[in-house]
Length: 471
Image (cartoon, rainbow, N blue to C red):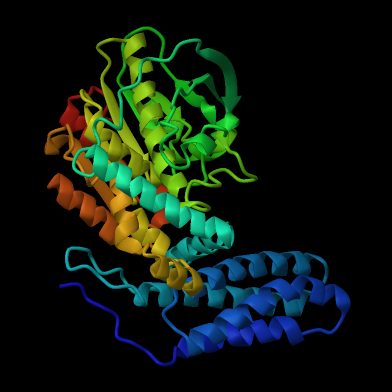
């Protein structure tokens, strides 16, 4: 049985961000100080009061952690500008508020009986605080539809729901997800980053949703998204296994992806050919100011087309690999959003050697509804669109809606006990669907680079597949 946190009327730890926010705003009365103090001070004070009076809203700790990071950065700048004593106190206060955000976030979440309890320590508070700050960044940047756009989105969701049922895609979406051909007219440009040479491949995505589907015509007008981008590091000479690495949300740039899937280990130590596809709306394919805009924010239907195109592009990337080497041995490693897409790929792409889903998201409806402001929740509910109905629409692109094509010995999951972004229940849902266990580590979403279990899980997948690389 899931262990639920006991309700609180007051959160005693709220006095820390309240005191820190007040100190920021009242420590000095000169204009230059207030210019730097206004943002972190006001947000810490506001989130501290909200935590005191309205504990339980996950947006509170997310904004608190983000304000703490911003405040600590500002404090360092002010320290260097000569405000030594005051800036030092502000820095220490921001560290304290950051730890509060992590601790309260962990304590406010329900714990599944099959997930390990995150240890309550300052180290875990800091790890969870990193996740909370990233959540604050994600939530602050959401561009939710308003007014008539919100009403139209609900209508389009119901239209798509009717089409899904009429086509039988709610029972089997295989006919919706057609197998793409290998790409043609592939452009290749040699590039270099962090001292490593790689090739950047570009080709037309070719993903063309039917115009009869609501929102499809608008989706196809995202011209920069229509070109697939894939980065490749391959060995010359003898055949090597290929590792398809699928990045997370708001990544897709070379510096983020090579930092996550480090070539020193994957390409050099393990001796693998490394392939990094850029997901739709990310990196060079973005249509907004930031990588990933409109993937998980904006119109709720965008997520369905983004995921459908992600599956198409990943399968087309696999087709390109097999065109280079017909007997290629291909494994997949996906992290976070990439874990979702790696799991989805396992349902449709035959012949893969293994799939590893790291800290995966598996239920986007729960993730979106978790942070949706109350006015939106009330409005969508009144229109007939609730979390479960949106989940049913997303079943069209859900890795949980269809059995995988791989044997369970080739399917692996790792997750974090203190994950505040992809909560542990996401990994447990996927593990149950695959009938496998979860490899847990005692950390958070953003600490996976430093957790040994992440590399151990990939090594286990490589050994099970019989690959020669085990370094």
